[in-house]
Image 1: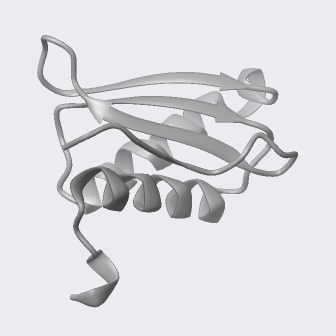
Image 2: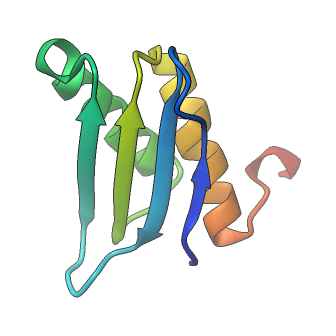
Image 3: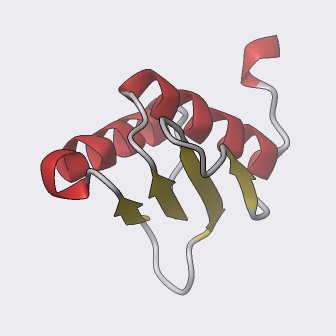
Amino acid sequence: MKTAFAGTGESGDIYIEVSPAAAKSGVEVNLNSTVGSQFGNQIKKVILQTLEELKISDVAINANDKGALDCTIRARVTAAVCRATGEDIWGK
């Protein structure tokens, strides 16, 4: 796995960076969000659920959210993971 990203910093979007976990196993989520006080737990939940569905562990996620909907969060996490792993999950 290499470091990869998806998304933008535009309103209504989320920028996701995926990289191999540093020195420890598991998933580490670092979230910066304009709506974090209201929806931070839900955003992290969607990120973690998406990684679990993709069978991805031992990664660090940096997320910069500008009010993205759950479907956008899932899409950005999936795209970043595909770029990081080189696997095309849609072609399976």
